[in-house]
Image 1: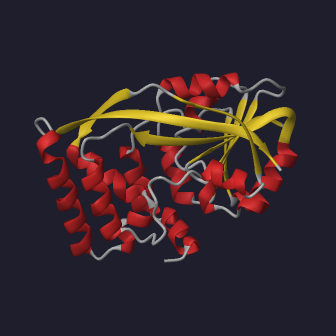
Image 2 (image 1 turned 90 degrees about the vertical axis):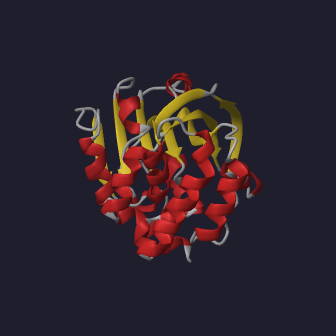
Length: 255
């Protein structure tokens, strides 16, 4: 399935609703991001903002956050979530490649979103919006050393609509190899244990473009859910799972 069609999955209300079951980023990540702001203004641009997992907490720490997101369903979900109505958080429903924002920004963030965009066009726009000493921070979240990871990857590979799915892919490194991004540094947070019902853990997979319920027949979605439930069954306690969560950030300047 083409990346354009996969990306359109985020327009579905069901995908936006499933986002609520994704684990939050560790608080340490926002300390890291705030320290990357070394220039004025203390304004942040968050591209591919989704439901504001980065934008909403950042708005508590800086003067303004402009959250650019192509999906109206995602923005609607983000407005309903804690911090989504802050006066210094500005939501813009538009593609990052054509965003109408004006800089400069002290920091630009992209959380698991830049790979859905045209990198050359998007990075060129970001470069023009950065303050002289500002950086683009590419953020990724991961489950840290899950004991069921290998079995889970097999289930995902069997059902994903992304034929190029590669759990080891690094977008910042790929952009650097293409000469589009100059990496200045990288860090990873410590692991934080997040506990959630198993049913919510399973449902959050349907917040991803390649596993959206809207792309699967109902019987296939049910089979996927059953397989994931079987993979984690021996690790759950009274219907709950404990997940060690980490986040990584790679920062630098676009070329």
